[in-house]
Image (cartoon, rainbow, N blue to C red; front, top):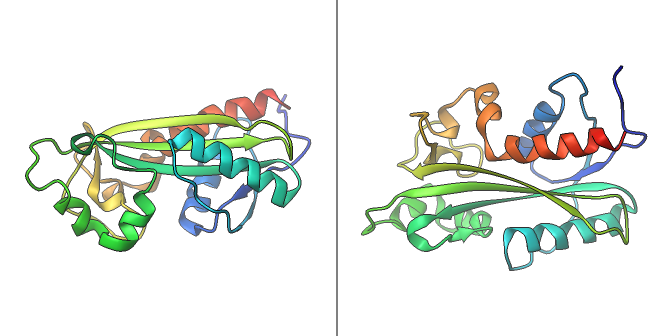
Amino acid sequence: MSKTLSYIPVFVTGNANKLKEVKAILSQGGNPIEIDSQALDIPELQGTTKEIAIAKCRRAAELVNGPCITEDTALSFTALNGLPGPYIKDFMTNIGHDGLNKMLVGFNDTSAEAICTFAYSAGPGTEPIVFEGRTAGRIVCARGPKVFGWDAVFEPLGVGQTYAEMDPIEKNKISHRYKALDKLRTFLQSQS
């Protein structure tokens, strides 16, 4: 017997590609999770990925006045002790794919880790719960369509393709976002 949530959480994002990917992953399996979405202007704080996710989710719960889900993505370069990390969005905006590659000039280590942190709040005043997924890989010269963030420069270990070159269904089976969403889905289904 399939269980469903008695409410539909709001996923706070203004990124259409991210929303499409999240909906595709959460709809998989025997107990799909339905979400609504809303774009909210929430300040991005500085800190660790978990600190940022918790603060963002607290504020989103207040703004939507109900259950919500937020997401934060980081790309951590080993040679740079984890930078750009949760600040990858600003780095992409300001220096792009080529700039990300140039940051590693002079380093022998191009390894990186893609990190996705989802936070869920049952509503205002509730402590957000964090779900994290990580995928190891390396930074390469941009390959594939340059339409979704830094996907064109991140090659997961053992795949031989960047996220941008991969079929979206295959990407969604191994990505950092999938790993975090799988944990979130399990939690939400246990709340049914």
